[in-house]
Image 1 (tube, rainbow, N blue to C red):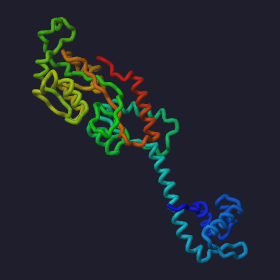
Image 2 (image 1 turned 90 degrees about the vertical axis):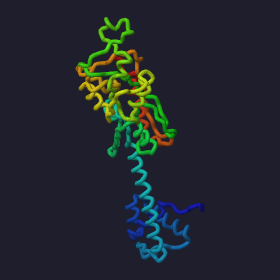
Image 3 (image 1 turned 45 degrees about the horizontal axis):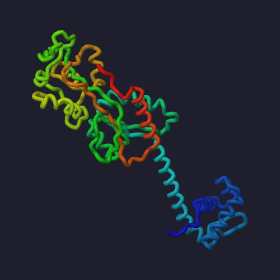
Image 4 (image 1 turned 45 degrees about the vertical axis):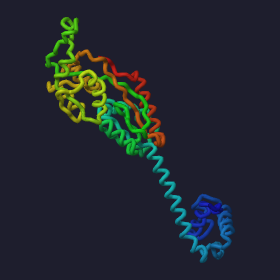
Length: 322
C-alpha cells in the first residue's frame, strides 16, 4: 500500500477555503489562524504539484484543478464523517445490552438483578438500551451462540462448544403438591408414623401424575437428571410450557411438580402448596452465566457480569433450604 501524504485536515481546509473564497473566512470557520490556513493550502498545492486557486486580491477562486479536486475531496470528507458517526454509534451500542434468561431466572431473579445493575451504573448513557429475551435454556443458548444475545443466564449447563460457561447461582428444586393432596406413608420409614411431616414413598411417587416442563428447558433437564435415577420413568405426566403454569396446576391438585424454590416460595408461604417429603436426596442445580467465546467484551457487558457476580456473592450463591 502506498504511503499517503495528504491529510484529512488539509482536504477539510481546502473545502472550507473553496466554500468561503478566502483564507480569512475559512480560518474563522475552522477556528484556525489565517497563517495556518494559508500554510495548509500551500502545502496541499505543493504535494499535488499544481495550483488549486486563482488569486484575485484577497479572494481565492477555484481554478480547473481545484474544481476537479473539490468533489473528490468532499467525498473523502463525507466518508470520514460516516466512519466517525459509526464509531459513535458503536460506542452507544457498547452501553447497551441484549440479555437472555431462562424462564425461571428471567421471571424471578433477573428483575432484581437488573435493578441492582442500573443502580450501580454511575453514568448511564442517554442512548442506553436493553433488550431481554426470556425463553428456555436451549433457546437462550442458541441465541447467544448466534450473537443475537450478549449474555445469557441459564438454569442448566450449555451444550454448545462456542459458549463460555461460568457457574453462577445455585438453585434448590422442591417437590410440591396441593396442600389438600393426601400423603402416602413410606412403610420402610420407621419414623414416618410419628413424623410431623409424613414421607411419600418412591412407589407412591411413581404412581403420581408428574407436571413437567418441555424438553429443552433447564428445569426439565435438571428434573430428569435428579428424579429418573429413582423413578426410572414418569408413568403418568402432563407437560406444560412454563413453570408458572405448572405451579398453578399443582396448586389445583393436578399432580406433583419439581420446581425451583424461586417459583414456589410464595405459594408455600400462603399454604397453597406443600413441600412433599420423600426419600429423595436434596436436589440442587447449578445456574450459569454464558457468553460466546468470541464475544467482544463491551463496557456494558463487563459491568453486567461484575454485578451478576456480586449479586450471587451477596446471596451466598446458594438457594435457601426449606
